[in-house]
Length: 268
Image (cartoon, rainbow, N blue to C red):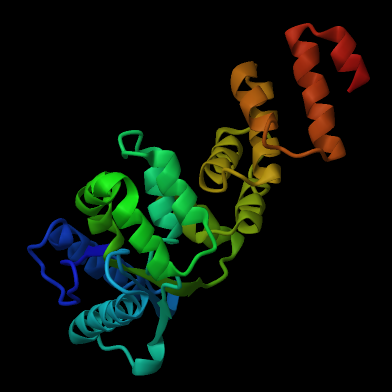
C-alpha cells in the first residue's frame, strides 16, 4: 500500500510509510523473479482516492496513482508493458467499502450511524460527500478527513504467478523450506510417502492445515492426528472447520467417545 498526498499522485518515498512499502514491493518482485520454481504471469495494479473532491477528479487521481506505481516498477525491473494490468477503483468516493469498514471499526467517529447511512445510500457520489460535509456542522467530515481519508489515498499491487508441479521426492525437500509452494494434493502425496503416524507424516498434515487453514480436508486430517495424540482441544477446533463429510462426522463421533459423551458418540 502506497500513500499519497491529497490531490497528488507522485510517489514520495519519505511520505508516511512509503519507504517500508516500496522496499516490500521490491522484495516481493525479487522473491518471485529469482525463484526457479516460479513463472511470473503479471502484475495487477489498483489505484484508489479518498472521497474529498468530485467523483470525476478522484477517478482521475486513482488512474494516475496506478500509472505512478507502474512507472516505479518499470524503472526498477525489466518487464514488458503487457506484463501489467490496471484495475481502477470503482469506489473513489463516499461509497468506498474500505471507508465504510474503517468507519464501522472506529467508535470515535462523530455521528457514526449517520455517516454509515450516507455511505449506504444510493445517492450520487458527489451528493454523498456534500451530505457528509454538512452533517452536524462538519464534525464527522473533519474527523474522517484527518483520521481515515489518508489511508484511502493509495495504490495496491498483486503479483500473479504459477508454481511448477513437484514430484513427491522434490516435495519432501520443498516442504522443509518453502511449503507454501506446494498444493494441498502435493502435500497429501508427500504425507502418504511416509509411514502413517510417523513424525514426518504428522508434520506434513500439520503444515497443510497451517497453510490451508480453511480447507475441510486439511482440517480433518489435522483433527485425526490430534485425536491420535489425545489432544482433544485441538481436535475439536479442527473439526469445527472440517465440513460434514461422512469421515468428518465419524471423527466427531470418535472425539465425543474419547471425551466420554457416549450418547452423542453413538448418534454420530
